[in-house]
Image (cartoon, rainbow, N blue to C red; front, side, top):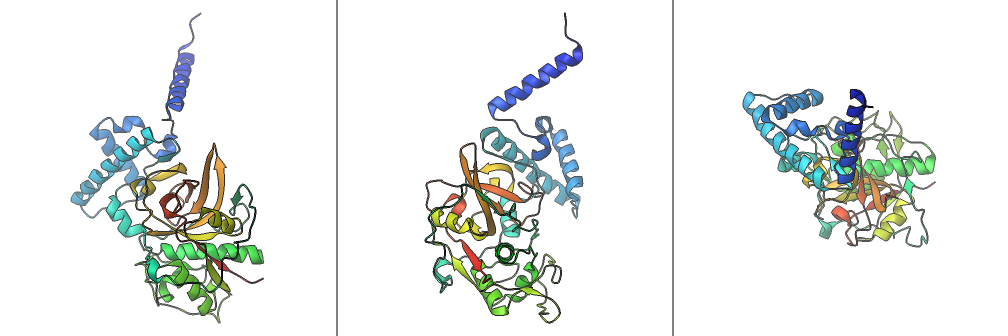
Amino acid sequence: MALPAHSLIFLLALSLMSFFAYSGLARDFSIVGYAPEDLTSRDKIIDLFESWISKHHKIYESIEEKWHRFEIFKDNLFHIDETNKKVVNYWLGLNEFADLSQEEFKNKYLGLNVDLSSRRECSEEFAYKDVSSIPKSVDWRKKGAVTDVKNQGSCGSCWAFSTVAAVEGINQIVTGNLTALSEQELVDCDTTYNNGCNGGLMDYAFAFIVSNGGLHKENDYPYIMEEGTCEMRKEESEVVTISGYHDVPQNSEENLLKALANQPLSVAIDASGRDFQFYSGGVFDGHCGTELDHGVAAVGYGSTKGLDYIIVKNSWGSKWGEKGFIRMKRNTGKPAGLCGINKMASYPTKKK
C-alpha cells in the first residue's frame, strides 16, 4: 500500500536530518541565525540582512553605510557557513556583531592592556599550591556564585567586568550573598594604572578595590557603557570588600584548575579571532593566538563527549555564545592553553 503524502514528507525530512547529523552539518538554524537556502542568491542574502537589521535594531546613517555593512555582513555570513561545514565541536552564528569586520570588532569590544614585564607582583603566595585533588567538574553558576551576564558595550572595559565577576564570586562564597557589583566605579575611579574604556588590567583593579576600601553595588553605581565622573559615595551605600589578590602561576593548567575548583577567576585570553567573534555554542577549539587582549572570568570546568573544557563568562551580553558564556577546550598539551587562558589568571581573596 502506498504511503500517504504527509508520511513520505516526514520520512524525507527524517532522512535529511540523519544525513546532516551524520555529516557533522546538523545545526539548529534558530541558533546559527540562517538556513542554507538563505545563501543561494544575493536577493535572499539581502532579505536575511534586512531581517537581521530588524532583529538587532541596527540603524545606519546613510544608504552608503548600509551597503558597506551589507558587504561585511555577507563576507561574515559565508565565513560562518564555511566554518560550520568544517568544524565539529563548536559552531558559529549570525550574532549582533555580523556587520563588523574583524578589525573593527577588535577595536570596539576588547580592551585588555597587557605588559607582562611591568605586571604588579603580589606579596601573597599561591594559596592553592598544596591542593592535592579536585572534583571532576565544577560550575560556580550552579553554586550561586555567578551573576547574570553583563554587556560592556563598545567600551573597552572588559578588564573591569573580569575583575568584578571574580569579586562577586568570592564574596558569595564567603558571605553567602550574591551581589552584583559596579564595573562603572572601576571605569571612572581606577585611573592610576587602568584607563577606562581604553583598557586595563585585572590585577590593578583588585589592588584598587583593596586600597579604595571596597566596591559599590551595581544598583548604586550603574554601568553607562562609557567613561563617567568618579563618584565616591561610601557614606550613602554599602560596599563589598576584598582583602587581597593572588596570581595563578603562569602557563600551568594544573594550578589554574586548583584555583578554579575553589573560586571563580579573572583570566586573560586572545579573543581577536574571527571564530571567537561569532561563537554560538559547543566546545570551542578553534584557531586563536596567545596575544592576550581580552579579560573574562573562568567560572567552572567539565567534560563532554571526551572533550575537556573551561567555562568562561564573557561580557558581550547574553545573546553571544551560550547565553553569554563559552566553553573553551582545555588539555590542549600547550602550557599557555587555548587562546592563552593559562598565561595570566588571578583571583581576589576575602577574609571570613
